[in-house]
Image (cartoon, rainbow, N blue to C red; front, side, top):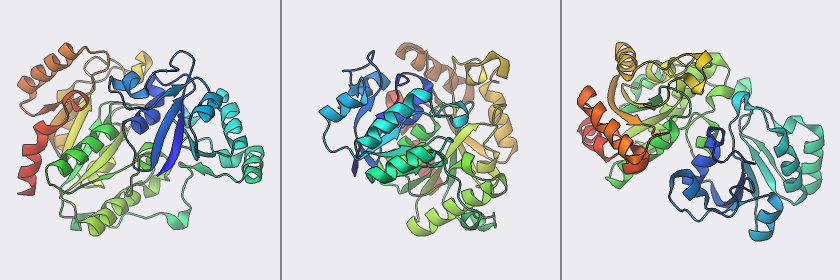
Length: 349
């Protein structure tokens, strides 16, 4: 794998750095050698900052310190996912410094580096790559929905949430890894740039796809994955939420992707969509389950995103919702997803 450092420029502890958070937790595409963030976090371990688990990934104050400390860096990965996909202006200077140092850039934002002539010219001069992960495919590369999804015999499980930044991708990865640890073959379909950055083979970038082809690209990824790997399970990474007004999403996974089982994530202490009162209050979990089941899918577990919770509060919420919902309630970060394994094994049988 290629050595990479992740750029967050002071945002590492914020939700905007969820791309960095995913890469810190694990990737099969790169070897993460460090994070460039700020003076405040410099010298700390990125994993410890993220979730209290040391991962041997140092945080650096700036790119120069990172380059001096870490040898043989091939890539600088932009580790933020901003509102509207806009490149933070203070990152452009760092990107230019990296190119001058002969480091290629991987960009998962909607603002494409290949649309900036000066950056393109500099990259060409220095012989480095500019990889815009979210660059839309050409029309010729896109697939239209065909109905082949109904030929897939493996259970398709959507991992969706009640808002953005709920841990959908992370939980889907943990579910895949738990299946493999229990002797079951599982695959994950990525639907965002971070899933690709983490090494995903099957998937597409949902919000870079023309609306007419979202269903087809989803179907094509699932069917191709099923034909090539014959997995016991296919997990679909969700995006946004069914009722987030800034970008409702998820019905495609249930209808076009034919996901008949769902793992639903929620944050018991989050009151408003994207923490913004103007966007409206997040409805209760029971009402979301009702919608999903009216669409013909079954919620087989819920998962708790424990932002703002102490460990004691997290386990108290788990107990409360297990009593209320009568289905497994997962704490993916704190204790993994073993509680759902009996349900998954019964699906195979």
